[in-house]
Length: 394
Ligand code: SF4
Ligand code: SF4
Image (cartoon, rainbow, N blue to C red):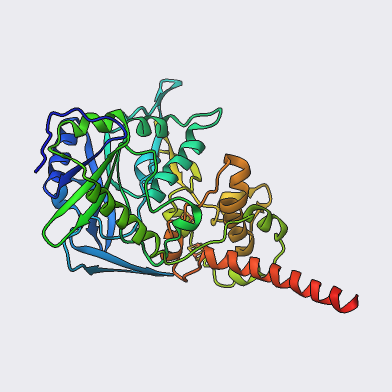
């Protein structure tokens, strides 16, 4: 092997580690003070949770996904990353579902108020997909890109080390290619791995994306990449790009949705939508939250908690006199129009990265790509009909 341990790595370099190198990478990250979080099998799904090393990864497992359907199956190899994204996303570590903001304790006739300043953990995310890097970049804009920076998110984000993995196994609900967000990780990572399994060899081509990534790779046994290995890595991504389960025509999508606030399709989808909010919980870019205050029965101690919320709940748009979005139609329309249209005005980018989670985890299989297609096709059909009538008249 062309081992070059000790050779200095730089951002932008490509190197190779063998299968065993993944455990070594984990050891180096742990020695650097990182807690590892990554994919593991739990409750019949591949979820993101704390891991100790490569031994906890879902080696030999893959998933099958469709609208409202997710199943795990065994693979016929021992790929560590041979699955697509599952129900969890990295937002649960950067924007925790439940977090205490402050505590107030009675001191005589006064209150002492203390901001909760839990130190942000130093986390290394193992196995971040290209669409997820885009989702993190999207949430960066939401939480850190404006005049008001969310200190909880910002501290966690600063401490995160991102090990991306280029996709080799997209799900039936993936459509990152049409959203221009995958399957190749193109930036925003410290290291990006491509897993390659050949008949006699299992290895990773590693792209170094940052000085922090270079410092880590300096400590992991690696070899200089050959052109054949680079080509094999390109092949993995090219094959994945050709295996997308779905596609969304995002051309002019903002204007399409703005023109169709009153489209009958919103009634149609409302007849199917349970307003359960699953789609917003699994979505890696959704960021709505609510704040709740709780006290003890003696009135001595109170706490303020931030919790994930959803535009699918009645309470979320509650104003004097009731909910501003009282129908399922208005709530689904709000969600989809925000994702694909108003988000672009608000943050300069789409709120959808094509990960497909909202399709897989919708209990009734509502499919955002299908809803867009239905509106687009009926508009196109209407335009064709109008053209036919005007030709017939002329
Ligand atoms: S679209 Fe599906 S997941 Fe989302 S609220 Fe409606 S039923 Fe639930
Ligand atoms: S809207 Fe659906 S497909 Fe798009 S990023 Fe959210 S969960 Fe993924």
